[in-house]
Image (cartoon, rainbow, N blue to C red; front, side):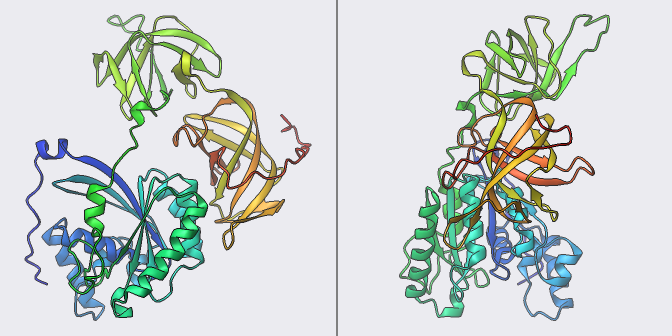
Length: 451
């Protein structure tokens, strides 16, 4: 492989504007080849600059390797390169004439499973790798469960290292059947299985010449053509208030705007809106986008909204359409993935961050913990440790306007924070559940946190 390889001609602004964006994540067990797959994807799609490839070739040669180790294109941390493993989420951005991509290469070690929650939380597709020699293992099931919990619409099963099992169709068929059955039980809506060799490049960007028994798409072809149906502009309109703007200048003596990024849906001038949790109502009298007035704004745009009435609105409030307002609640039931080294226990006093609002809360109960082997629920475990998936009941000090995670991945999610040092403890999905646990009486609290 020559270090003079030239990158593909960059896409023009016009071409990029005509393509759609796909966010996807990779996951799998240790040494299943996630980083190699991503490196191969970038290299064979001509998304690697010549100087990047030269750096990889030098690093590979210094380690005594004859050929460039494409995994180094994503393993950017020195500790990762030295150990030959991925220990952090590596984000990469690339584009083809058909689509733009943001990918997250997540770690395979069990102790870094929590990192997948970060990488897959905004993904529309997850590529889960399986070593053809090992088949579906516990970590595979864990990643499938997280993808199901996070409601990732599309899952790709990439059966890697097919070259090490002589490209046998029977091996691929058995693994695909095992995984699909498990994923279906989890509620994953769609699984696409692809046999690949990331090292040799089979079925990654180009079709394999040695697996003529496979007639499906390559990994890149599937990424380019999978429907992206996550049109948040048609979801419930939600604007978490990030900042209140009051310049109080001679030019704008009465200006009072409420700034934030639209989490879902769209807002128009003239819309009747409600500010939660107070419940006060008004009409949108103006919308400013990049300093210019507009009539309509939609998901992911950062805007400043002006209201017809002078009502009390502050950071952490949620502006919603009056005809489509969520309920405000203090008792939150959710499925969570615990990400901290310290356990989460019943009676734990925490901060709950939902959107731009952070409130005090107590973990009133942990009704169940998910057992990944058979998807059974271990009742009343008392605590969750790092990487556990479980069901929790939380009582907040103030009412929160929350959506079901099934309706909105952004306003139906939250994190729990340790109030003593700011550590993120747990990522939660409101209302999500594999099975309904038995109702349990709320636990009592004694230190002034019994809301």
